[in-house]
Amino acid sequence: MVVIVKQPKLLPGVPGDLLSRLTNKSLFISDAFVDGEWVKGEKPSTGKAFSKVANLNISDFEKAIKSAKVAQNKYYRSTTGPQRGVLLRKWFDLIIENKKDLATILCHENGKTFAESEGEIIYAASFISWFSEEASRSYGDTIPSSTPNTTILTLKQPVGVCGIITPWNFPAAMITRKIGPALAAGCAVVIKPPSATPHTCLALTKLAIEAGLPGKCIQVCTTKNREAASELARHPDIAKISFTGSTGVGKMLAALAAKTLKRVSLELGGNAPFIVFDDADLDLAVEGAMVCKFRCSGQTCVCANRLLVQKGVVKDFTARLVKKVNELKMGCGSDPTTTQGPLVNQKAVDKVQEHVRDAIAKGAILETGGFRPKSPGFFFAPTVLSGAIANMKIATEETFGPVAAIFEFETEGEAIEMANNTEFGLAGYFFSKDIGRVLRVAKELESGMVGVNTGKISASESPFGGVKESGYGREGSKYGLAEYEILKTVTIGNTNV
Ligand code: SIN
Image (cartoon, rainbow, N blue to C red; front, side):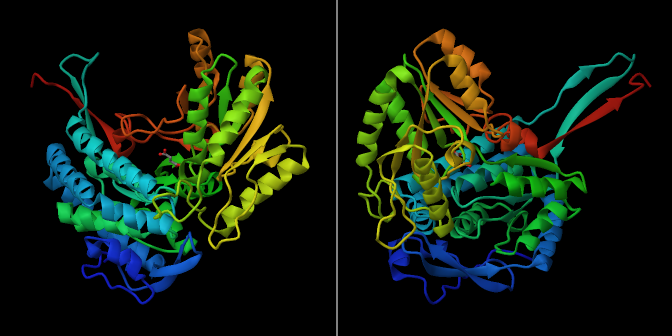
């Protein structure tokens, strides 16, 4: 059985500096749940390993899934929706109580700034709070029947055990956005946290158990073994898979899940257009670009990837953006003066560098940045390129790094065509003061989410998800719970007997 290790075993190599900064030291957990091999995690700002976490194999996953299945039946049958809501609320309270420690762990393992880390913990907690309330609001319909003496009811029930696979860029929020609604609906979950950032998930799990959520309903299987993780998509006792990550892995999981017709939610890659029209408030547009391009050092699925700027304002916008970008300060996330943390690993740095190199080779102008600092760690300088065009890698691939590439356009129609010229469709943004244009362009953009005059679109109350190859399903919001429920129809005939 896979359960959280009650007495966390701190391994040699765990740095005093992280532990000494935690008030609740028991939140730093390096063990996963069953016997396994140890793997190294890397600290992004130095590139050095700082902890070892259990590397589980397929049989560990099987044990976790079987155990979760038994636990799920018990949990659902022994709790009401409002009772599950109370448990989630207690968990929310504990997350907020421990937010500094959780943010310290997150900052340490992910590298994002402490301010961003704390912001993420609060964002993560908001999903638990939201679904603690939604747990009471899961009810069906009474449908007037066309057959005499007949009543039709719909019931909402948990879909079953859910396999949850989440990425390193949001080690807390992507977990809670999935398991909040799953637990509210009465499901159990088997989580495969990101191998680069497992500690935040382990700490959150510990707090969930302290809040009274049944231990075996939340199983955390740390692993670097892809085959073992794929067991979540293959195993017949998993009823649903929810995955956030790359489009390639999402397609592979969907294909595996199809063999047992599992429900699947996929939040995948993006290539977000960020359009600035001539009539935009340029101060707002620059502020929006800074938020949605450089948040998490450009490593979010909803980051602007292509900045499409209308000819009349392109020079002015570029100059203002460069000025702001030059104010950013790269450094270790725990340094309070840092505004840009490192990227996740060397591969990420290499990809960013290749996108910049390719763009410059094809005619883009380097306005600022474009280099890797000499200091250790996976850093890349915040960069602005102008004169970007469609045949560059940066136009078609998700860069996932701190590079703002500016493409020029002349007409609204041209901007929409350029914006939609991608297989992805997660987020899109535009800036305009013309209400007619606001409604037109919002309808025309082929993306699941549109930000108008803002670079911030993520919130627990707002449906999150994409179209096209950015995936399907919606997370958060009043729609998020239904992803973890089945709608059962009950037809009661001969009601006059
Ligand atoms: C993501 O990058 O996948 C999530 C970003 C967000 O929730 O804002």
